[in-house]
Amino acid sequence: MDDLDLLIDLHRTAERQGPGSDEATRQALALSGLRGQRALRVADIGCGTGAATRVLAQDLDAQVMAVDVLPQFLEVLKAKAENAGLSNRIETLTASMDDLPFAHDSLDAIWSEGAIYNIGFEAGIKAWRPLLKPGGVLAVSELTWLTKTRPQELTDHWTQEYPQVATAAEKIAQLQAAGYVPVGYFPLGHDCWMEHYYSPMRARFSAFLAQHDTKAAQALVAAERCEIDLYERHSDYVSYGFYIARRLPD
Image (tube, rainbow, N blue to C red; front, side, top):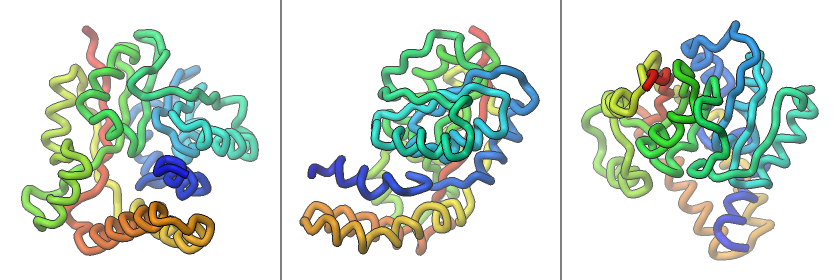
């Protein structure tokens, strides 16, 4: 089993594959202005097993296209959507976020929680903009520094893992430069990291290692434990920022 297969196995049964919560998704929805609009076309990019997808389908009059490069996650999403009675509102698509098949000016909203880092924030907001209708909504959560200065070990870790980590001011300036009007921002709270992501993942480690008695699996868990410890000690300095913006006309 290679590293990707191990990652899939560790996260496939999780409600979320990154920090977030239903409450945070709904807070972003409140800022987006999408509620009350009719017959929306929404794409949830890098949806994982679909926690945010289901909230979007529940709260909006919308057809939601759930997009992920990993079909294993989409199979879980489809089962959860069926159990929640949402199958008629959710479609799934196996595709890479840097090669999306949507027509230009075809989407009312693009949603992406904790996933745009796979192609980088700047590259993602530029590549996805043409797919939105003029005035369409972009809502993404993105790793964000909460302060101008921070402990060196935290800076070293996240600049190595994701060199595009930056402050909210820098991210908002990037949105403006790419042809969007920012309409809302908030940082994810501690519960989005611990209660909804890290603690459930930590609870899966023992069973995961019992199933995968390999050095690669042990290394994966050790890296995750290190990241959790780093967050627990330095949560005042870093989080995901949720950015909501509208596409300007050309």
